[in-house]
Image: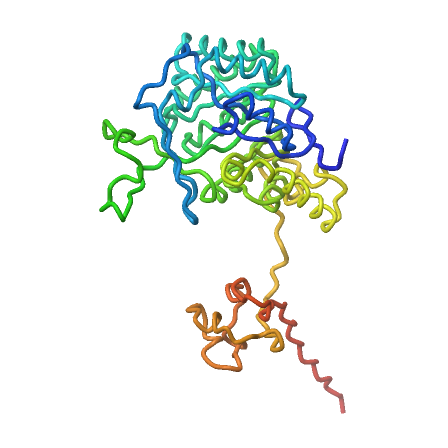
Length: 407
């Protein structure tokens, strides 16, 4: 066991980084490379119940990464959902050759009727027989945005039935498109071993300015006037951190958090607010699996700097200890008044701060922080040389009361 080791329900992980479900986990060679690169586990591309089906010309996949926007993806069903035969064989071969946990992701486009529940159970059972260590229930393509109380009850009962019928851990995957009341109800399921969150976010097609506003991707993927475009990567990070905090206030069960993570600090933020591990997909697709080892090394250095012996000791460090789950809020910091100070010998007069339209501190040099700066920190973050620093204001000294002598 190393200091990076952790657990997700019954799964023992050598570090907190799981390679998430996506194009990097849809072949046996992908999964073998993931283990060689140091991933603690892998979640396969989602597996459906359909038989192997030849790809048609219209079965296409498109990706476009744009800095500041993230990864825009558009795809068709057969490119996104593996056939039952192929997916089960993928799990079987992976378990025969790899030693790390393999989580099989399964999908069916409905979960309402008894027949639907039977299909989901059969998908889970097939992956159990193939040797999967756990199963993820992928609900991304089911419309769960606004549900009645009755539909929520039926859905949760169905999920509970699927979990109860399995002999391996079954994790519902939650996403931002799900009804909030449904998510809260899923947190209340008694035998759920844990939760995986979040997924990419649905969006309408991006348009290409240089092509007179035509869709970023070709029209075949936009037929019928419907979009199944999604955004992944950087834009998801604030949603991931918020979703994880809300989950930590709703359940004590293990959480695997992901979406938009691209640095060791992002991983540690998720752990500090309650996740026990993370899944990373888009960043590793774009930058390569060798980033896993680099992230692990950076996490170890952070543990040293922060004084933590292990990753497990850091989980939940941001949260207030509380007798009730709902009160597990992020610990408040001292509300100190702060003001910026200039370290003149570091200043190179780049004028970046002088261009800010935030306060009146930089209208002339020497800068006038008193009565202007309220500690917003924007100039501190933008200063390229670290010449601007934030310091707590010293409390005003109360004048001593003058003693009145009696005559």
